[in-house]
Every structure is written in structure tokens, then in C-alpha cells.
Image (cartoon, rainbow, N blue to C red):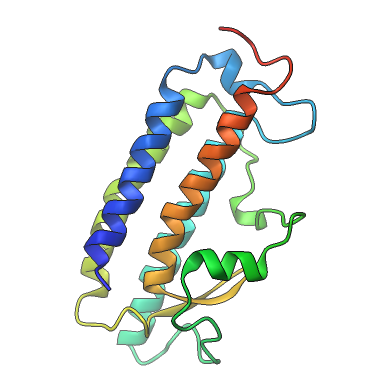
Length: 180
């Protein structure tokens, strides 16, 4: 398991999403599809909040493990599973974003795109927090799926960016999406 590769994959997924969203106007970013899905700006806001939560949870779990106070003491029920499998097994079609990651601040897409870029240095710094620890022993619970290890959290950052990249593309195809 290579932390650098997991972070590189997440950063590449972020770059693809940012590239996809860069040409979107303010009106397009704020557009709400008729089926009550999130706007592009709300998707990006959610990504910012969720990624910060992922990084913070993993960092705190590493810190707790070092101090002899692990964040998670239960069974690592997802040990060895790829993140795609965990999400398939624990998320249903009606799964909602955990409250701390739900978009609520609003604001323009341009702001959230910059904020998403600002998450990259936080993610890039995470290996330093994990230095000397076995990432599979750095475990903290996801609010929906239960306990994930550091490698699963890092893989989730990539997967989550990909999921919301597809949702953003769907918004651009929704009826009534502004042309400019």
C-alpha cells in the first residue's frame, strides 16, 4: 500500500473535477436541477467539507494512536476491503451526506473551487502525520459506513471526487441548465 500513490490518485481526481468545473458560469454553478439534486456549487462545497473531514479524522486517529488513545477500539469490520466495495455494501440509493458535510453555506462556485484547491496541501501533508504508523492500524469511523483505516480514507477522497464529478456532469445535462 503506497500512501503517495493514493494521494496522487486523489489529486488527479481533484484536477479532473476542477478542470471540468472551471468553464462553468456563476449562473450555471448555482443552477438547481428540477429533481432537487445539488447544484454544481453545492456539490463542490460538499466535496470541500467532506475532504477536510476525511483528512482531519485520519490525522486525529494517527495522533490518538501515537498517544495510546486510539479513536477506534472496535473490530475493523472493513479490514482489507477496497473502498468501492465498502461504499457498495454500506450506502444505499437514498443515502444522504452526513450533516457536517452537507452543503449549507452556499456561496458562489468560484469560491468553492478555490477552497477545493486549498484542500490539496492538507492531503499532501497527511503522510507526515502517519509517519512511522501502519496505515491499516490508523482507524476512525465514517459516519455511514463505520470504521475505515487511513488507506481506505485516502482511497475514499479519490472515489468521492469521482462520484461528485459524475453528479456535476449530470447537472449540466439537466433540463433548463443555463447555456452561459
